[in-house]
Image (tube, rainbow, N blue to C red):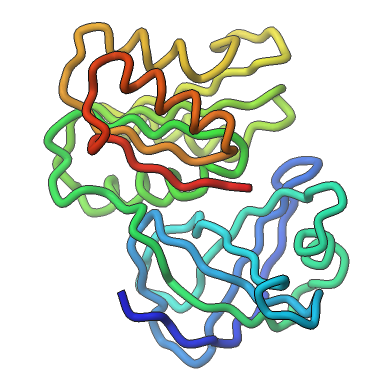
Length: 239
């Protein structure tokens, strides 16, 4: 895949999604249509270090391609993180951001001819939000699609009402948030028992994993232990 050139994006909208996550809408003035595949990411180059490779921060695109030159990122403020501290404290509406993209091969297969498990933690829901809306808008034929979203508490849930609404509108789409540190009316615990229970019959499936390393490592082990092929597993690692 050819490397994209560095471009200048302009922040046109900012909203707090939770107490520690923020949504940024970025316009690309030099392009009429910023096109990408759901699941891809962009790399930002904020002025936080002299060495370029110490500055670069990559984020999955949380919006879906809609024919415009605007895309959305959802970013969590990391304690002590130079990149996110800059974005939260220095970037406002009208700010310019240098970025490169879209990049990445963490995208849907050509045919959704088996169940798809989109397993995520935290802002790892971003690429799956993009994929789910794309499938709905374009009436992509599909089997069951599960977003299994692991968070600690209800205040950490991202896009909760939107995903519940999408579940009511998109046939065979299942949004399953699960909380590890709070009791509520939904699933309680980590993401792993959720997909294990759904795969008891070992039906054909694709597995997409996005989030923190510990979750991804554990999920890969468990999916392989269930008897699935390694080629059925796709991952996008955060941190």
